[in-house]
Every structure is written in structure tokens, then in C-alpha cells.
Image (cartoon, rainbow, N blue to C red; front, side, top):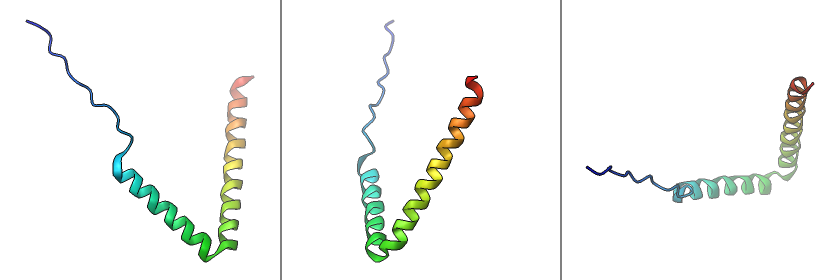
Length: 67
């Protein structure tokens, strides 16, 4: 008796749901920037600062294992 081969589904990249969600997020961000540009700039600066702090912490953590 021959072995039965199973077909694996190929990843499609997210489909229309992911695209729609991306468009909604971009629309909301654009609306926030248009409505309050100074507040949006402050929020973006804070997010980038937090990201830099997180990267520094990861580098410190990785450096503890390197030596």
C-alpha cells in the first residue's frame, strides 16, 4: 500500500483582514497627526525614547553573557 501524502497549506500573507487593519491603523495615526501635530510629535519622541531605553537594556543583558 502506498503512503498517503498530505498537502500543507501555503502561507498567503494575511489576506484582506490584515490589509484592512493596517489601513485603519494608518488612518487613525494620520487623523491624530492632523488633529494635534504637537502632541503627536511629543508622543512619537517618547515612544522612540522608550525604544532606545529598551535596546540599551537588551544590550546590557546580552553583554552580561558575552564576557
